[in-house]
Image: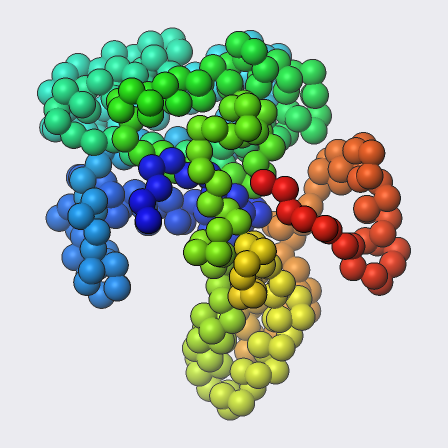
Length: 323
């Protein structure tokens, strides 16, 4: 199954950026000489697809964007950040691009020039966008009027993605992979996410990020060996981690639960240093901030949902998962 344009959603600190780093090294034409070193011992290294190291890879990370100021302020900052990235890519691929790339005020025009140079050089392009909704979510929660101007009509964010969609349709851009924490922004900017195929609820990708129980068990056993403890202690640690960290099932068709890798490493790093579980089981880096709770509470059913979670032991029943 080959997906040319994908949207992949996962919670914060779940390994999305790491996965894009893997994809970059796998597809980047400039990393061809390192393929055996990076992937040789893995299944994908022994049975690679024909696409490995065949692309000019563009990496955009929207977590670097600022959510402060007016729509015009945000647009200027966004274009500046993306243009800086494009200049880095021009330098990185200078030896294989046969046509000059022009840097415009609007980053989408710079991307167009870059992709034209890639095609002129008889190469293929792959755009990887990380945390696509990072700054937009912040704007959504704190300045709803600014958010609507960003994503509606001729707003800068919608204009950017309209350009990307056009490049895909023209064949100027060959492949696209987008990650984020919510599909809401993508829905708002593309009238129903018609720029991408939603793969985040697909059973195939349920455990693509995060750790399965078997993987977590393996890590726990390594930590126990490091501390020179009886391997039977692994059952106790696994049950403790399962109580606190296990429970993510992203696909309605899957029954395989996965662990948040940040929490697993938080637990095991402490255990390796002290040979006992941490007193506090939760990593503060993952704490949901008050702003998100306030935003949820503003929704019609949001306030009651929060009350139900905090004041009752009964689980919230959700009849279906929305794309």
